[in-house]
Length: 335
Ligand code: PBG
Image (tube, rainbow, N blue to C red; front, top):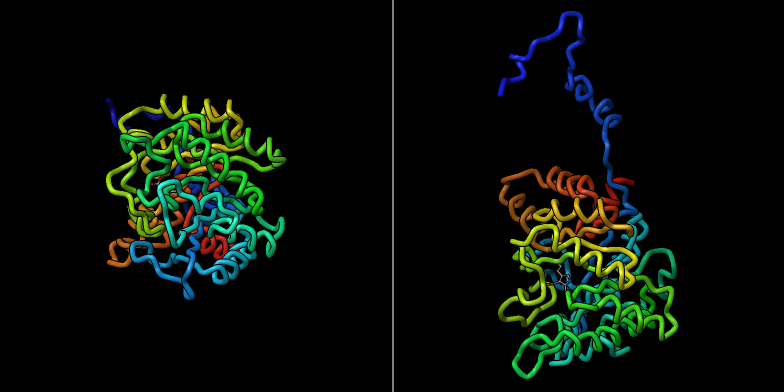
């Protein structure tokens, strides 16, 4: 192949100079194709039962397990900063094999939803993680069968109850994140049957068994030993599988679909965004956050530039909504 400098320049033909539009901040701003609006960002938040002070999460510097009152305060601040929504995760004091706290109206996540909905009304989109792993003593996303394997269809029954409990508690939207087959359809039917036809479903459509979820284990005091490879996707599969998963979720009634993690799966995100008839979200997960924070703490890279660059990359790959632990900070910066 010839290099650009060897290409013949036709006499009288103007030489293209891509650098022209990079010369000043104003030119670059004008030429920019993608930008991040605070209203596209969703802040994931953790609330823990039985604590009186917020607890820092060591592997996620700057992120805490909230008390009910610190959650309300931080949620209000984030909404005032303009974030588009809040995604809640609950950490119960007691866990059991069935994950009973998940659909208990007095369970931590449902109590937190009720309080936030009372406080914030419709000022934001209140979302809840719909999965059992924070509530089970074995740490799996579903209930187990006699052989200790995650039982898909028995888990769907639990998800249906959990979805109804979250809708009753005030969630505008539930995020089905357990990767059981048929989960969107089961939750949709349960919501409709219980009078919650307006409660939306954000389906974690393409979710990979990823090392990027590492810090999240600490964030929710997970008791998981082993991994989730028997239900979350294998990173060695191509986008075809992600497209099939997305199509199933849409057919079952997903109002929006998600790709997760984000940065190592931008090819998947692009493909899903091109094919999906519904809005597409991406989740910049705990490990993506931790990598940047840790390197920045060592002085190895510029934190703020990395935050902007990673979010822009996710946007460029087609996400219309981004879940990120930096949501409130970025929204505040944009004000
Ligand atoms: C499932 C769930 C997980 C995350 C969001 N929902 C954990 C998992 O699937 O292992 C991870 C989010 C993150 O790492 O930031 N309840």
